[in-house]
Length: 308
Image (cartoon, rainbow, N blue to C red; front, side, top):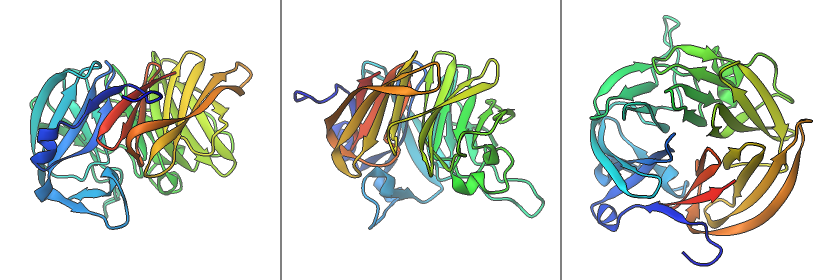
């Protein structure tokens, strides 16, 4: 680590890279652990127009390996995951070492039902159940109790899936719809961008024509509240109490803008710090997730920590 760079939590081991393993989908777990799904070269396609790991596609069915490391970067487990039938958009951790793979899109069948796009896997990698968690999902997180929280994009919000049209939704680990907004969002969201948790709260960042907002959901009561942010786009978010750290990437460049804000009771926020931080690798889409005041940011095949 050079001066000015945030501390590194984990990097893809050189032996895995030499073996042709690509680090694709990843998640920041409720206990501060990092989970990454590794896929071998023979299952992948590479986009000529999209840089970074998000430009690496897969051809289902495919095999993969789930790697989980602790908050300190120590290896915890490696789990083979065979015969994956969906192209995931998201990976998330669930209680009892289970995990979730979710495709970002789904389709409506002729009989009116929606195709399942979420698969729960057991601790040993076997699929246990599948269900649908809405259409057009750019951001997803899970809570310690195993509930799933999703933010939707414009094709979901203006589409026909009922939960997607609410812009945000909460789901049980069995796929039951548990939460939808009670009141309209200010300005009306167009697209979710990232999600975080902070103790009992779930947070999401989303944007619309007038700017970018943060929304805090209180699962225990179902209440939600929103704050405007000083950034046009937010790629990473972490919240601790009334303090938040936001990052905004310069696409495929090894740096990011880091903005710290204080959230006020009157629904406004004030900037308390702003700088540009160099990272150990290039930053592309889906680069940030937050847990309890810590933002885990992906830069190439390295993950760094930024504290709120």
